[in-house]
Length: 308
Ligand code: FAQ
Image (cartoon, rainbow, N blue to C red):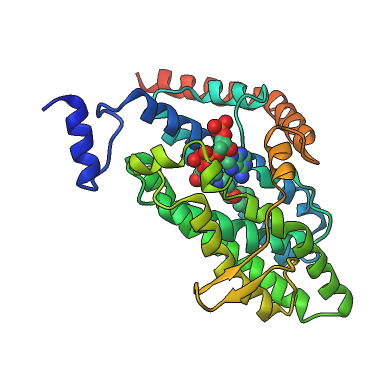
């Protein structure tokens, strides 16, 4: 059996490809691209929420938000580790992100303007992330699939805390409910954009599905998310900002309006409302944190010296 045949047999048997296994170069490249983007999204995704830690309305909410942001850092670290098993260096991934050569999710290029944005990010952004990531627990690449199992468990807490926070806001004063509606108005469409372009415009879906990296297409996941989320908005008494949204009895799904693809591509290409700020902040944090990395390395070397 050739190496390529063995690779195909593993995929067909629904087994996992492991780091030491032979894999096609493009399979490796696709995984590095996707896992690095995913890791960067978790790390950049700390910024919009970190922005509210010092302004959380109660100590209870502050503790929850800090734990959530810390979890995102952890997710980034699992994912960088998963990418490293494919032979890419972590510093290299950071450099490519800082130079704008690596992408991260479009969603994190929007500003967080009110406290209701924290609940809405948990509800919608974590909700969309889980919808996408549950299929990735079945990804053919072992280290990525296993990282996803743990990440999904944590994201599910994130989603529920967000929704719970919105239930509280929506049963509060009219001003609080209006704040929640305003947050939904601003985050709904960017959340739908998280699933990527239509299947017909998606460069990678067909091949990634053949390789069992992706198991469900962008449009099917988006539909799943809409079907799950609209009844949740109804329960909150909030209105989804889409005039074309209606239940389609025949399809058994919600029909919904068209995404503003011009806005999507502008954000993906670096021209969204917060792209420049996000990268500037990330580079500054990296530079200012150099002494921490140096100290950690010196400490590790000292400990190693003490052992040998
Ligand atoms: N933003 O051919 P496709 C989170 C790019 S984690 C930016 O369809 P693919 C946790 C795409 O890269 C959220 N770029 O691509 C959290 C490609 O460009 P390239 C992140 C996008 O890979 C919550 C081009 O468009 N999750 O939120 C986007 O097959 C709360 C063509 O697209 C993941 O990364 C986009 N939205 O499918 C943290 C999940 N969509 O690379 C803090 C893993 C597409 O050729 C707070 N990733 N592009 O230059 C995936 O499942 C896939 O990569 C997709 C895109 C579905 C995102």
